[in-house]
Image (tube, rainbow, N blue to C red):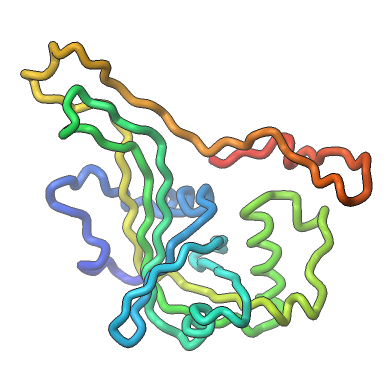
Length: 216
């Protein structure tokens, strides 16, 4: 990655909320499911929520070849990509001091359409495994016609900023004796009971990778 610039320098007001460890960046990106990709076209800002996967220092996005936004990104444009994980609601005694515990990455890079066949297949497999490990080898993989309908965009991370909050309530001293509950309400993305599609072949066992699925 390039040296940090003003795009990713931490705020002087909360310097302890920034994490320069590359492993922290990768852990957040690997846990997230959706990123938001922001870019500017002819003076009009756009932001797109989409799935992604990380392979070393590169993010891969995939979408339809007919997507207007993916066709624009295929030209090679600068983008800003963000991923945020919410870990809890911080409930203070005063509304002013309410907050959230979170982990976030804001990354900058330039888009590149993936045209090499081997890299496209690698990206397809890694994308599937990022969403649901074990599914790529279990389900039918794309055929050549389906791959032709899919565009893969690579974004090599030039620089990134990692920001987080991971502590409890901070209240004013004069509010400490208020009759108001204060604390942290932890939040976590958690799977619910699987709902089988009954329109196909009956009696198929639930795979272990679904039964044991979790993020983080």
